[in-house]
Amino acid sequence: MEFEHISVLAEETIENLNIKPDGIYADLTLGKGGHSKKILEKLSDKGRLIAFDQDKEAIMAAKENLKDFSNVIYVNTNFENFESTLKDLNISKIDGALMDIGVSSYQIDNASRGFSYMHDGPLDMRMDVENELTAETIVNEYSKEELTEIFSKYGEERFSKTIARNIVDYRNKQRIDTTFKLRDIVNKSVRTKEAHPEKRVFQALRIEVNRELEVLENTIEDVVDHLNVGGRLCIITFHSLEDRIVKNKFKDLEKDCTCPPGLPVCVCDTVRKVKIITNKPIVAGKKELSENSRSKSAKLRVCQRV
Ligand SMILES: C[S@@+](CC[C@H](N)C(=O)[O-])C[C@H]1O[C@@H](n2cnc3c(N)ncnc32)[C@H](O)[C@@H]1O
Image (cartoon, rainbow, N blue to C red; front, side):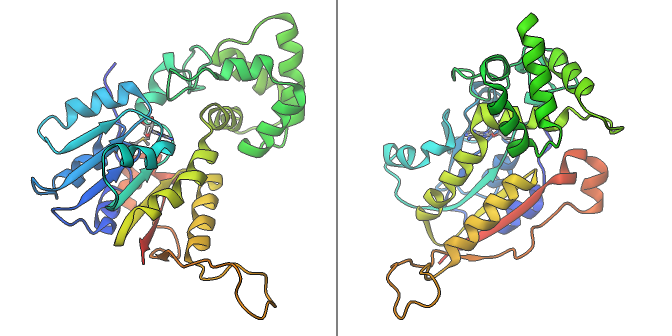
């Protein structure tokens, strides 16, 4: 299957990275390398790009896409290993970084990866296929209460309880092992006229399988800690749960003191690490919206190391 993916907010991201030709940059979510290619086009032979992806197939596709560039270091790992990877590479500081969170169109469109309610496939949803936890395990082995919580928390699904109950009833008779079996159970559980009511449950499972919110939350500060002063971190997110994490984390990192109000002197020793560049997130313009439907929900936030 062809690895197709149109990069979102590409111009805006590259512009905001303020790329220095001899600098070191990190793309934490390489995918097919659409954003990376634009970074590499601005780098000299001395510049370097460290490119992370936890999906082997993405790394392979990017290697082909970026074969004209010799200054890329490919790292097939979760970006939560950012710090240890830099240490292994003997790099202490970088000049900018990008995170384009979530899955690529290739992962979604490839039925065998099990991300999509549009294609019938195994209920998998792992970005890193070496990981043990799949969506099938969650759906068949988590308790009704755990399923309810995941659907509410990660899918903001108001029929979570009913869906979880119907999943448990169904799996008592037969295993739920395909995307379409799950889709049908969800559709029978909700009262709505919307086109794809199953989308929130799929989103929730994907987040749980890949620990998406946890790794995002844990990695932002690690990246900021390794930015040179003036270096920027650009993060593109696709739903409100991710965007909230980025917004709040940037705000925390901008604070000079986190002591409770009313203390006579600061006891927290918190030092401001960033300046927020985008008070409101950057969103896609009309042209991009008309060319790429994925851009509809994209939000870009940028901060700069101080
Ligand atoms: C939206 S795509 C990136 C597309 C890329 N920016 C482009 O323009 O081609 C996200 C990619 O990041 C990877 N990814 C998501 N979360 C990750 C994580 N925690 N660690 C490493 N890779 C991750 C996914 O496997 C996927 O290939």
